[in-house]
Image 1 (cartoon, rainbow, N blue to C red):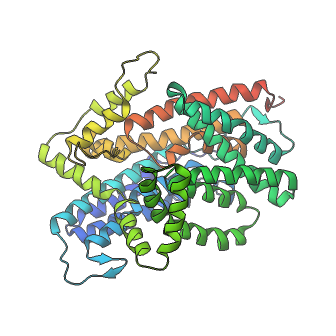
Image 2 (tube, one colour):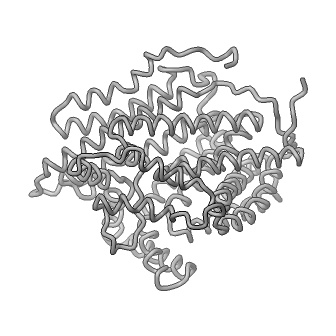
Image 3 (cartoon, rainbow, N blue to C red):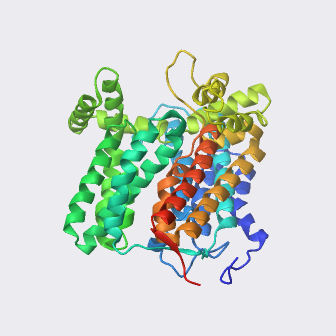
Length: 471
């Protein structure tokens, strides 16, 4: 630990768990849920404002936003803990934010919802605890980037990484590494575009814009909402230090618009894709979005999205109900399966298919029936709960936060600081931590993401993109 780091009293971390204790002390499920839901905002507040540990207080948020304590926590914990409010409103008899009279909430369902929200809150507290425990205001690095034209470098990095990532991601044994390299390509294209605008480098601006738009179009053809939202969000974050007011006035409404239209687009795209090719599906989905603005379908689709897709608390309640009925947890079984998933298939050709292994517990707990062709892998926190209840949640989420911050520290140490190490390398390789996954996939991504990190470090040293600092 360098001289600028100060030790934090372990007792201060208890502040993270105060909302959880308050929520379980309240017997009424509605009050308990609301306390647990609001508790996550309290955790955001105390972890962002140096109430527990100094988190680079001398720096404005724009110069540290990509650190896991901030961006990863906002996205991962925000998605996990805060989006359930729509499901709760639906249970309370609301539809499209309007009360539907005559609907009586189910007390049993509310109890399960409140309990699962408490689990989310405990998981958020443990996650923030892990992040803060390993957070360093300054990471000492022996290396520095040897780059004079940043927009040009990132443009070239995107051009090189995109085809490599595309090929490797479709090569079974190397697909995880390929996905990491594709992540680097997306981040590189975004940074290049964001830097070329204020620096007025027109040639690079045009090429970077083409690269970025091609990535965005590819995201639209993926059939998933997250890549589109992440692409736009990252551009706004990288532009924010240069155009604070313009970004706030432009990108916040743009993000709200995306959340409004993407559910309709994705639903239509997936339906059309089953009967045609991706380009036809994309055109039909865009047409459906345009038509839906003139009717009630957009509101209906969005409410279904908010209550059933953006939040997975409904599935969590089913896992809890099944576990209560069964009376036992999985113990180390899921962790063991995750360990098996780490073994390369080239060394074990008959290794069980990871997706099928993860789906077994989905079927065992009655989340979906075995005749439904759908992937419904558990959330990371659900696997923690299934493994060991409250203790399983705490261990799993503390580990998740600690590893996220450990990876970031390594990126800054090897690549010479925040901008190159965190904003580019860590965001590109470890962006999967924003969304999470079941144990089998997340541990696999962590291991091979870490391997990609060192391969990139070796490559950049050989290419003299980074160099040792003079003594």
